[in-house]
Image (cartoon, rainbow, N blue to C red):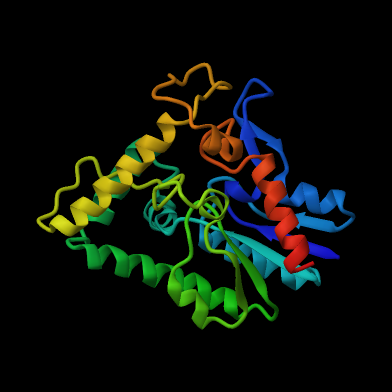
Length: 258
């Protein structure tokens, strides 16, 4: 089969420090598919947004016929931040300064929990709608974030796994978003539901990071106690599926789809 893989850094495989710098150590799902004899084109890219990956998929299917397409679903807010700073990257502002300003601009339009969730639904529905127009099924894998329920309204989108880390470790309390770029340290709202929602997610992220020693990164201080069950799927970098998690995903896809 000829297979297209798309998405953010989760589509690239296992990330670690074996080369002495932070990079992909194993090609993950795409590598397992290739080793099984399939021809694989991976248009995914670390740090990419859902919108950019939609464009990559649209270009790819215009140039090549694919038997299967797999898309790793990313967090919605990356597109917001990308839209805010994409026209200012050539100015004297550093990325960190611009990223901080982007977050301020984003939060200025959010006052309640419903505002926040509505924005997420709206942005993801825009992505789902465009992908649904691609003239063949697209298999969706929840990576750095899960899908939202409205995805079931789009006939061409087949959710393989709503969120792969929760599929692998269903009893673990993962944060809502992995690899999130939202900064809400200075955000204040009069809506206690929104504040509780954000703080609970931050606590889950801190707890997860404290469960994973960053042995490959000499600059990362190790805090907390290792969680062997979590490390089995997310070590060495603590932010992405490792090769073992990708292997389980590949075996599931092989059984259900290929």
